Amino acid sequence: MIVPGMTTSTGTPPRLTDQASDATGAIGVAEVTGAGAAAAEEDFFVDHRVPAVRHLLSIADLDRDGILEIMRLSDAFAEVSERPIPKVPALRGRTVATVFMEPSTRTRLSFETAAKRLSADVMTFTAATSSAVKGESLRDTVETIDAMGIDAMVIRHHSSGAPLRVTNWVGASVINAGDGTHEHPTQALLDCFTIREALTARHDGEIPADLKGLRIAIVGDIKHSRVARSNVLAFSALGAQVVLVAPATLMPASLEGWPVTATGDLDAILGELDVIYLLRIQSERLGEVLLPSLDEYHWRYGLTRARADALKKDALVMHPGPMIRGVEISPEVADLPASLVTRQVRNGVIVRMAVLFHLLGSGAM
Image 1 (cartoon, rainbow, N blue to C red):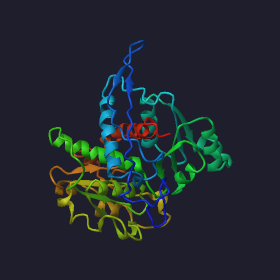
Image 2: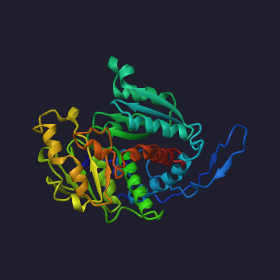
Image 3: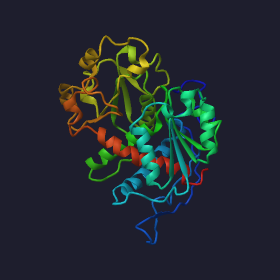
Image 4: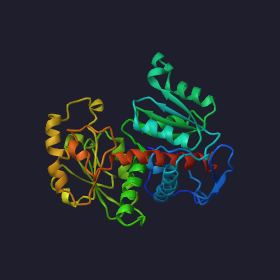
């Protein structure tokens, strides 16, 4: 959570209006078209803006223009992903380590796939099969991995702020893949890209400048959600109106400084929404009984077929996963054409390619 006194990887208080460097770099990317074939020069990234920071710990590390730059790069990598061989040598010679101290399917696999599609070497660390089970500290673990000569470390940890601490111990760029209840910035970026992609298809290929004018509801366990915190920052930075929907027990103690409105009545706003973004009830983080039952939660806040029918005709349904059918969403609704859940997973690879190139392929190291 962004709170007074917290700093980003730049050492400054996080703000949606943080200014990024206007330095630019010209990057050529060659496409490998086959064994022994001559490489053809790509111009996708000629105008890429060199990032102002070496790490991505929070959406606050990117201003509005920085988010849009990731979107622009993602457009290029979306084209790459459609090729018969979806691979470019943009990060050949670089090494990316994924360091996951919590279980993950989508995020870890998509980062590893993204790195491989950029021709980077990949090192995979999982806590359950490492010296961490013998009592090795996080610092010793990441310093050991860094000593092997890596360029980027993608880290997920159960403690909020752990990736920021890691930046003090390693020389590699650090990417936050989810830390406690703090943030999950690449999830927010892929969500912005997915919404933008859906709007582009709706408007005959015309790419919207941002998300201005959209009303987006984030529904569920806001209190424990790192995805909610990152998405509030990203959606708001791109001009969307964000409303948080949850019972009082699943709302943060204070929303002071959050650019949002809040309500406990989902049914009252369904017809106003352009996007409904559902969150999983994080039973593993609750630590106390905050709900009478999951059945009652589904009755009051789950996206049932009746609630789906009450949405705008072209409203979008999103979920970061893992999706618990029958709790936050009814099984039949999860598979409706309006659901972008599978598209979010696909776009996770594309956007994480853009993030890795943004940090490593632009001469920022």
